[in-house]
Structures are given as C-alpha cells and as structure tokens.
Length: 507
Image (cartoon, rainbow, N blue to C red; front, side):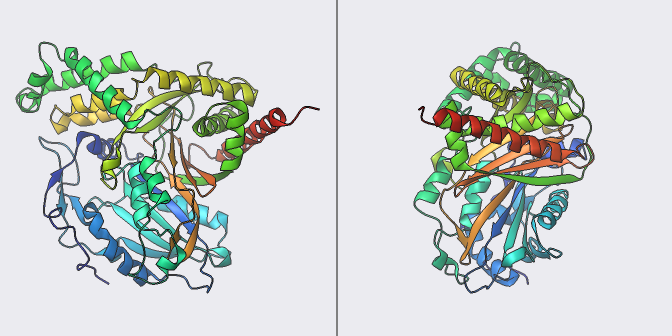
C-alpha cells in the first residue's frame, strides 16, 4: 500500500532545514568507518489483547499515517546522502514517500522465545539505514510465544537523540487500553506518562539540569574566545566563509579548539581489548532489573538509580576483562554518558539536544559494594563541578564555524577511543502501563549506537517498574558477551544482598 494522504503539519513541511553540526556528526562517524552504525532503536514487546487479536500491518500503516502529522521530519530525506563540501545537507520533503517501505513485517521462527527474538534483533540492528530515504524503519514482529508480538524501531541518530526518541515513542502509544482497540480512534498519552517523559534527563546522578547545562555551555563559549588566536567570537562567526578561502587554516583552528578543550576537560581513557577495530555485525541482549531492587540499593547504600546502573555495568565490564586475563586499569574504565539539555518547550522537537559527561567506572576492587561507593563518589564530584558537560557541545559549535568538509575530523576526535571506553545512557520512562491497539506494552529493549573502536555499549530505559538494560556488542570482538551479562547480574545480586543486610533490623 502507498500512503501519501495522511495528516500533515501545515507550514512545517516544504521548508528545507539544514543539518546542525551536532546532527551531522552522526552521519560523519558512519562515513569515515564502515563499522560505525549510528542508529538508535528499541524493540517493544506487547502482550496480546484479551480477545487474542493482534494488529495487522495494514492497521499499523493506517494508524501511523494519522499520527505522522506531528513528526514532519519522518517524511523527509537528506538533500545529499553524505556530508562534506562547503554546505550542510538539508532535510527536504520526500515527494515519493511511501509509508509501507518504512513499516514492514517479520515473523520469528518457532518457538518464538527470547533467544529467537534476540537473534532477530541482532540482525535488524546490524543493518544500516538507507540514506536515500527518510532515515527510520519499523518492523511489526509476529510469531512470539504466548501470542505476544513486538514493534522494532530504528532511527538515525542525526534525526533524534535518546530522550527525543522516547517522546516519539509516546506519540505511537496510548495511556488506556480502550483507546487503542481500533485504528483512528486511539488516544495520545497525556497526564503522568507524558509529564514523566518530558522531564526525562539523561543520566540521573551525573546529569546537569537543563538550565544548568545551557548555562555551562554559555560559560564555555565565553571562555572559548581565546581558543581562536587573534579573533573574537563575533569575528570567529565569519570563519565559515574564511575557511572556504583558507581551508588549511580553518582545519588548524578546529583542531586547536578541540585539543585545548580535551586537554582541559578530559583525561585519556585506558586501552582495552574492547577498544580495537570492530566489525559490522552486532549482538544485542537485554538484562531486566526490577526498579524496586535498584531503589532498595540506593536507599541502603546511598547514591541514585543511575549510580546503580553504572555500577552494574562496571561489574559486567570488570568480569569481561578479567576473564580475558587483562590488567584492570587502576583509574577505572571511562564511560561516555550523554546528558540531555532538552527543555520542556522542545518536546517532540527532533534533532539532538545532548552533550556528554565522562564518568570513571571503578573495576579493580573485587568487592561490589566498595566499587559502588566509589561510583557514587565519582558521580557526585562530576555533578558538583557542573562544567564538563559543556565541553563537547562547545567543541561542536566552534567546529561548526569551519566548512563541513573538515567537520568529520572533529566528529572522529569526539568519539575517539582515547576519550572513552564505552557509552552508557539512561533514560527514565513512564511508570504506568502503555498500550498499542489495546495490547499492553510489557518490555522495552533499548539500543545505543557503537562508534568505531568501541565494542560494547549499554542503553537503559526504565518503564513500568523495570529497568531494561540493552547491551549491544560487536559480534566478532565480543564472542564472550555472556561473561559480561553474568557479571552484571552477579553485581546486582551482591549489591542487593548488602542492601538487605544493612536494612535488616538489628536484634
């Protein structure tokens, strides 16, 4: 079926909007290395309706068509499939947009259990998006055990960040079962679920509040005046034109800005076997953790939910490296933790509104509780400093003054293995049951992209009482991923036992 007649947002389409330097970064990371896949995504697993009826692909197409009016970017493609040259690609209406090419159907082999879904998801997330089309895909996955079904989504990071993708997901779901029993009559999420989504902030403990982060970016921008010798920031705004005439000078300026900020803001991450060249095939696994258990740990041992998530991840990484006989770095592993700087008024605004924090994850101490307390201390120190999150945003803004042809150099440097060992992102979601076509959503399996020479990443989304830890790894570099998963579970068990012991009444 071809869908050209859905609701459109008048005045938003037919306007060519150029990529921002930050959005372009995720395209450039793919261009310079075939192993980098810069799409985010999720697999949402639903229980069947009480009557056992599942939605069809045709029903989904009809319903999605009625909702895309709020998301005009999803009907647009890039004016050029690659960045470079002297101007950024633009988002332009796709006159040949066909919804049926973006929403397809798949069926799992029997018995349709967790292993079959994991293998299918791994293959789905291993494939890049086609840059000649709007940069998103959805698949209606049938054949899950016990009448379940799933909706898998994949969206390029140049279109939306993690929090933004959660907002988009809410547009497709309902807060009441009755709202979704028929196409066209479904109700949008309102009330507590919507409010919780709008408030979601990247890492709970290490993140700055949006106002703090914007202020930090402004302070760093003022401090950056001295990074361009002989130029004020006002004059530096002319560098885009100047760079066209003097490309080598522009490249030197961009590199100088990057080197100064990196030297001031960061220390080199340790080298590990997980930070070597990787391949293009992914393995995707999910570790569910009860939010009640995470809350029990933070109540008894201090810290936040995000500290628990970071500590569990560190425990998994420790187990993986130790099993390989590697020396555990005394300074810990370096996690790149995205920080949301999206304000409430930017709800459903696409594009990226993120910066980054770099958190040291302790891995040397054998005791999980001591490592957890060290994680809490590291997070508190970062939050009290309140300035590191501005670093990468400022570099991107300064580098954006140079012609796009040189911007890929900065993109590579910002995601180099010397800066961090892995990405860990945490997005709090709604704590009420959501629905699609009357079917309750039970699980969300989130995906974070892997940059070149980064073999492991962890994305965490909390929903309806459970934190779902999506672990993605390069299939060839990490054939022993099960060791990491077991390490995460073991650390959770140890921390929970310590929490229960500390909370138990003394006789």
